[in-house]
Image (tube, rainbow, N blue to C red):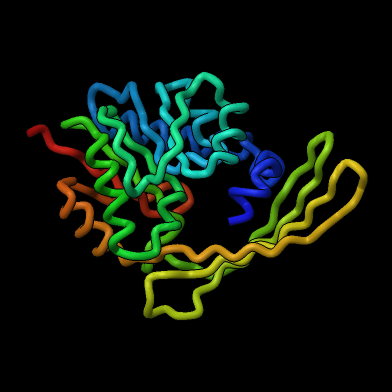
Length: 238
């Protein structure tokens, strides 16, 4: 995908880390309330440009995993204190466990039961007994809403604006589409337009809970301030 590859250097103006402050504070509260003692070490699967970690690293020792070397490069500049690992979140095995595992909207790129379950298994295998995993999809099937959004920002050298269009051409499958129209303007004032389509996963709540049980978690659903559904999954003490 262009947004995470050739356009990764534009990520800080596409998605400003400051916009994640409120959400990250909510995530930190959820993680700290979900287990006692509160988590100290957190593994983030699909960390992207590191915007969530930028805020969470003040509370937790963060290990960040992403399969895009370009996005990891962006994140290292933003979060030099954090450990960064290149890896596929479906197959990653670090050989160690963490107090908590966190998967934000990277989970949306899993479009089949097999891939979704694989990420859950990765989370389980890296979660200490008694620890938790937190999954935050943009939607489950029951909460999906089509719509548009826009954003972007400026830096000293670059300016970016985008339009995002979310829609579902087939409500009977496990995917939906997000089209991005991205307008990029460089330091010379030259502009170009890029179209990017993301095919994202959309699963019913019951399937999420079933798959989490299958890999060994005990899971519950909670809602956040934006009326999304979060899945808190606990690895029981064996």
